[in-house]
Length: 129
Image (tube, rainbow, N blue to C red):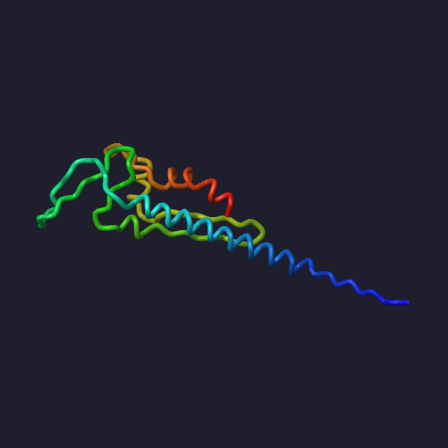
């Protein structure tokens, strides 16, 4: 009579699934990060200002448009992080205080949303990833 031996590999299978979920989350976050940086590029339709101390002009964003780029600080601050384990989560955003002020507005400035619209526009691609 032939002997059959069964080996339990559940732990390895679960780890592989967790690792793949974290990898896909990182891919989705990177996609949103890149699309957000694209949204923060390009010309705007707000008021035009002269940059102090230079002969250069700068066109600001109008309310409702993504913020215009003067130095690129906001665009360069867009980062993502992934938290793994049993539950995988990802975050895309900026640690800069002005990022929140621009996204949601303040008493002195109307909102210039850039992150929420990007997430909404890219939701089908994120779900596909």
